[in-house]
Image (cartoon, rainbow over all chains, first blue to last red; front, side, top):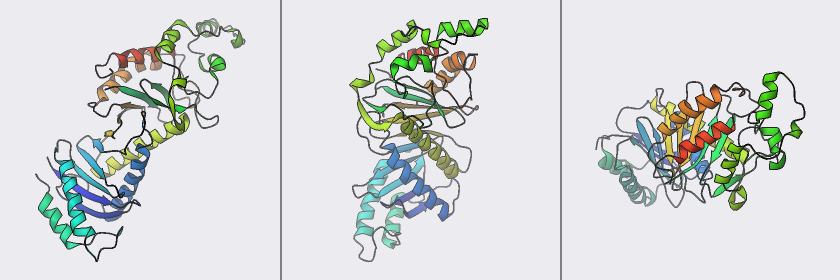
Amino acid sequence: MAIFGLWVINKAGGLVYQRNFAEGLAQLTSNEHLVLAGTLHGIHAITSRLSPIGSSSGAHVIEAETFKMTILLTATGTKFVLITSIAEPSANTVLQKVYEAYADAVMKNPFHTPEMPIRTEGFDTRITALIGSGHT
Amino acid sequence: MTVYSLYIYDRHCNCVYYHDWHRTRRPKPANEGGGFLPGVARAVSPIPPASASNASTPYTSPRHTLSSSSGVLVAANDTQPQSAPPLLQTHAVTTPPPASYTSTGLPFDEESKLVYGVILSLRNMIKRLSGRDEQFVNYRTSAYKLHLYETVSGYRFVMLSDPNAESLRFVLRSIHTGPFLEYVVRNPLIEMDSRERGIDNEYFRASVDRLVRGLSIFN
């Protein structure tokens, strides 16, 4: 039961926010995070085309052996990705709250440029209050 | 709850087998020259069905088996009866013709490459993220769930199922240890790793079909 990390990916596939919480996964450089986020953006688009029955959304949950990635795609194309342990039940609720915090602290901030990296202190604070050190 | 399709890839990244069950949107037949191997699946093969029995089933024809074991070359493959062998006929009855489905608009060779690309990228991503040799297991969308099982010999078994299914790795594993070993690995007429043709043969197909239809999740 741990939350390892949070990504926010803009509609073009660029990583605009990345934060680590609990230990347990590899420590990557910010460049590696950028590459992985771009890959995820591409995979997400392809997964919606592979549906065997009618239309499909992109991937919601991607599971590995010890962790999973839960993806929330908003109507505007921004993706919130939460990397948690497999048994974490609250991933979707946390993502919804992150989206709320994003709307309040980032989108309402007149000094924030849309689609650019998020450097808003208010968002950081809200996320810390929400997820803390990553142990729920 | 159901199972939609099964893809098997070899270590040369080629799709060597394809089987589908409850798909309502099927791919178009593969393009000629799209890198699609013969002997993967009749339903999506680019050759028209009438001549397909000549080209794609040398392993399933009893006559061919006889001729190769006796050392007599029967060059006249076209004298072979056009009707499918009994096992294939039962299979043809259980699988409705592709015409009753709407198409995904993607030819099969492109679809199989997309599936392979997705699992390859996800595998790499999971390895990088975890920092150890961790496997990608499955992903889920609103319409389907994709499961991956990888063997030590480099074969990758991919299954698409209902999104609410539990992990189906055990099924893929039992396809590998059961029908795959019995009718592909131990079949002297199947050239594995040939890069030129798939591993489709009627016993393997019938046995996979039985195994999947017997699952509690299938209906």
